[in-house]
Length: 440
Image 1 (cartoon, rainbow, N blue to C red):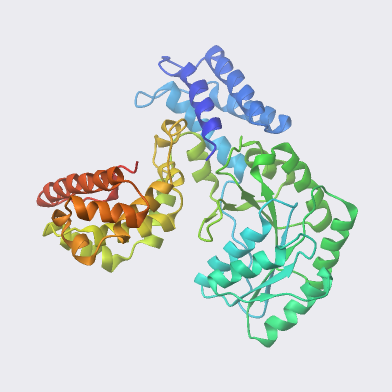
Image 2: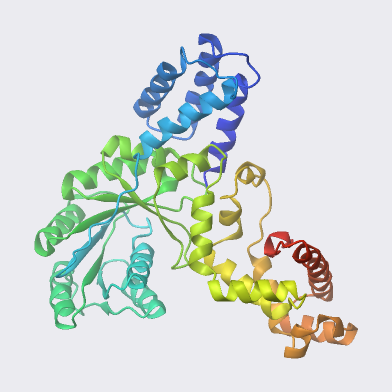
């Protein structure tokens, strides 16, 4: 996430590292470079200018304590300014404790509104909300079918009408939700390739008809300042409550993420990356600031782990490790839990110091799929007793999994090495995990 921006900032900060103290000259040299980095990332020029001025005024005259270096001090100042720029604190969406909660999703075509609607429905359902998805995007081909497919995946009903009338769909969805005793309606509205009067009029009308508790603007992070311009136009029309950054894990330079709140004055509430319905993060300004500065995001990583790893299973796994009985069945369970957490690159990017190291690394998310296919092609006895995997068995497994014999041999070898390492660690009172396994 924003590896390019992170790497360039890291390079810029090297100018003050190793200095005995912060001076006007070394601060000026570093901030001149950082300003260029921000502008290259397509950050709004006024935002970049104000950011640099704030950092400069706070850095000048600061005493460098014996316990820290000039580089650490300027990094801390920049981190704090990034947090201020991104919103200081996390902002919740408004949900009604009684009665119907209506959430209106708006944005340009291709920004990821429909996918986000499904992700938000999934998240709210997990929090015991009774959700209805309303298909008010009547223009984009297959938009309604896409929403129905997402609804089926998470077992959430989808309301639609044969009539091509988005206003009526939105209004009737509220009646339907009340009849079915549902407490939350998420309305997926239509987008256009560009901001136009017809689209804005329709969105404004829908807002008046349904009186939403929350209006969320979904923006494609890869569109830079265009995203900020469309955010301003939508806010002037519907006065939305919050922003959702989508595709921040793609080739996003970071300009939209760093500019949009300062320009529009509305909080960022979610990060929506990828197509998987569990790939939705609540936005925390301090956590994104840490990622941008290459400090990782351990808190989010731990939260993801807590959401996807069962406590009882973890205790059972620890017991098997102590008894040296960890087998491919246990390994498969861990793989499935890791897949639920998101892509390997996004998980590794949350580990401090890993973001920049991954810049040019080839992280193959299909590696987990191949490993899972190989294990699924094993018999129950082979999973429990990997030592019986002779040549003919491995040949059968490679055919059944659509992989090569070399792939199977590599997995069995690495698994054996991991078992030995876990056995040694467990004897020392330390349980091992997939952290020690190479996915290649």
